[in-house]
Image (cartoon, rainbow, N blue to C red; front, side, top):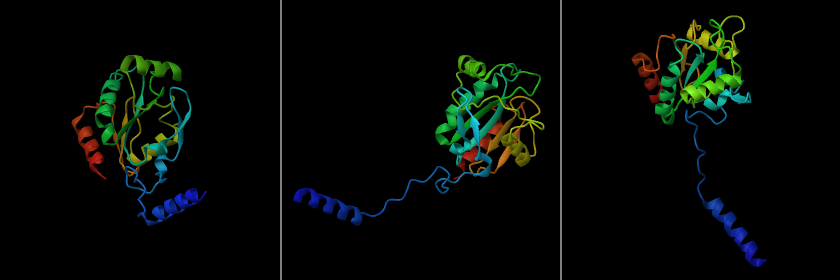
Length: 194
């Protein structure tokens, strides 16, 4: 019993004598738990429709894309996945939001869309359930993206680049491919911001 008490006392004294360690900082350097208003919402995941907090992407550079399986731009999935793989360790995340808003080019169920993305393009970046992205029924996340950027999606594969601050938003049309030089310059500039 004496040994146990002595050990407890020594351990307590050691802990008191050690300098306090700083808590690990978030990728953005922001205070733990800080979530920009733009990300302060929950959206169901495509694969299982389980709610996901977008706050988990705070402090990262985020490329948001409204997607469709039966569109002339559908092959952009390949470039988006390559972009995600190349820059994710540097702080990029690509978020896909399938939408049936344009010419009915995303008619499938969430499960069918998930299978298509996996089977045809080996998509690994986060995907969310089918979402209205324009007009009066636009999801609030998309309404905020449009307001902040001054641009609404005109077709599938419209892109929004969100800076690490969660407030800077730049828009790119469907014609802007994931390999586009201007998009890549903007993306790299945002990744370099700390």
